[in-house]
Length: 408
Image (cartoon, rainbow, N blue to C red; front, top):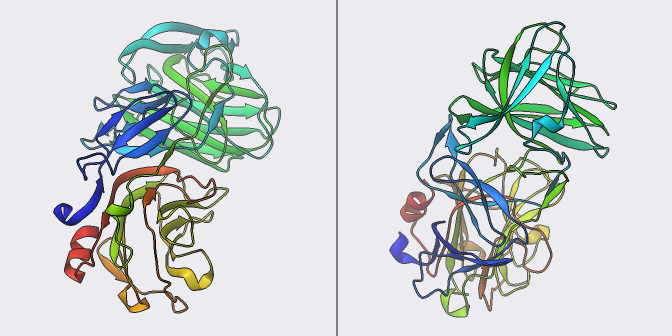
């Protein structure tokens, strides 16, 4: 199948630059299929050894996924929106305010980074509300508060926010589960391996004080836990870790676009294929992958809606341009292929190995001038926020058997 493709992007090679880098495509080998990648700030990723590390501005992030805390062998391209960590001391927990009865000790070995940059938080158990806290201003609306934590002599950790909505969540660092939660939009615990978890809470409110308890909130359990990487950001989900040291820090958005030229793409027939997953199931705007001439009027486009559905379009985003709509949990990896041609009857859509029915109102329009593949909308700023595992373009129609093979 790869030999039939005119452009194959499997995230593997890149060149840095500030702020502009290059994401190399596997095909064609002459560089015509490479993507321009821009991000004006540094950012973090999980590398092939499963460690969180920082990469320079402009460098595409080949992020290695974790499955039950185990790093996987093949990376995806991580594309995220701009986010700001509003906590000025994300790693130096000695700068947070402890209550009497709490001891904070730095220079603890951290399997997340391979360095001694974790902290131990210990309570003497004299009361049930011993914690460390940081006071900052969260905006009204949805915010996400997250911390990496590992059990010590205690196996419970609690996150809380006050001076706004009083949210409280208790996490079990043995089982990787949530014991209880109060006044949250949602909460999550994610396994990062070696006993470390990322704890996150989405809440709606303009809170100003944020707490970490080294036990079940409200109990007098003496003992300790280890922590690293606290983050407070505006949005309904946690993004990659943004380190801070004395002030807030903003990570700029990733932009990846403009691969290919007119010689690589066939206006008359072809297939656009993508394997991807989204960072969350909804966002404030639609997000796109587009094969076009630089305008939506000559294009094949994948649109992930603000509601979390996948729409597929030919030459615009009106109802008659919509080839198909697919509704599923797009935070899970999905393989989608759209075959296009000169007539409505030439169009086919396959998702995860299954043929999809076309929209009953779809009427195809002739495409001309295809010359670029972008992980974005052709003319406006609707960046794709998610994880790209593969992108491919074929300059010919494929058989049903080949489309099944491609998307299975």
